[in-house]
Image 1 (cartoon, rainbow, N blue to C red):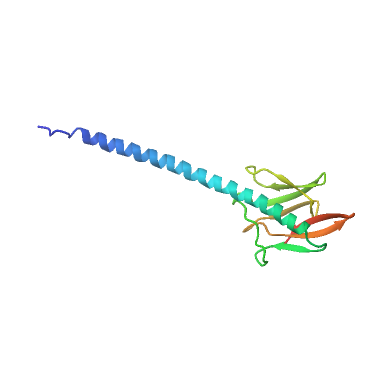
Image 2 (cartoon, one colour):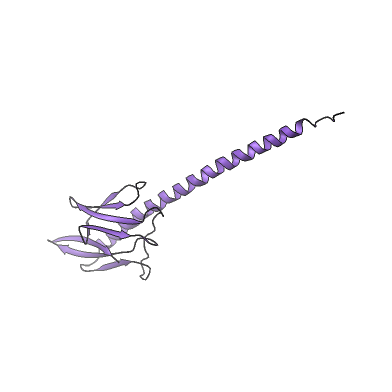
Length: 147
């Protein structure tokens, strides 16, 4: 004779396995989205920090250097792991900052000019660079170069 409730026990185990599977599936999906959200926040912080650095260099005396590197007081700017290189292109008086990743959009900064036509800087451990305040044709320009 069967005891009452014996048939229900396998259904409880199956239900528990299904619930655990859903928790794992949705949990892993949200962990992935959290990393993506974190990387976007790091990139937005990079954009803001680079703009602040250029503004700071722009407001300094001519021929003033600001260096952002591991060995300086200003540390390199953090970037998401997917970005291995940042390029700076001069166009129409503005400088385009172009990451090598299609995920992140390029942006422009006024009064910034690369030291060479198409300057690209590798981003090992963050973006290390040097800014210099210069006056060219009676106009203040901030020149960016390798650190």
